[in-house]
Image 1 (spheres, rainbow, N blue to C red):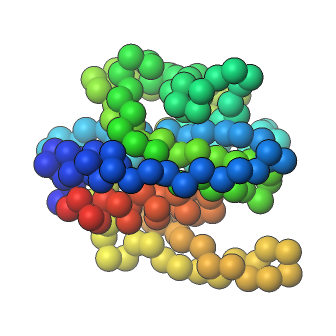
Image 2 (cartoon, one colour):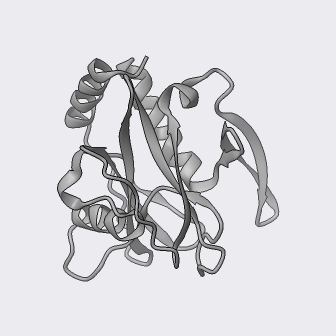
Length: 190
């Protein structure tokens, strides 16, 4: 079970594990926050569903995140984007680690950060970017039925993709890849 003791173990795992940083200046730099939210005795992860009107990754389930602004640190960008998109105050976010960089098919180089959200005061959605916010208990994501691996076509080839299911939600694509990398570390902590 992912409880407070597992969170402390995860914190230690992340502290001693340097993230792989990819050098890809031709890609646009972006960050996401994997927000850990206390849910009773356990923990959940917050996800968003992006607006259908966005140019990149429209309608997809995602972690809060976006492009890094000029002169901004990656850590600050992840926290700022979570505050802008879903209203999580920067003062309530404790970053506990960073996962390896990932490159998207749409030309982004993404740095995923893991953050514990202290004293969640409710979400304020920026409707131009986000149409829905929901939480999934980590226990559900660790269930033996998750992830489902399917092969998806891309540029006349097929690639394996991770699909996580919870209620009516199907989490996959870039978010599924980052979630799998995160949960691989969580498995070491539980």
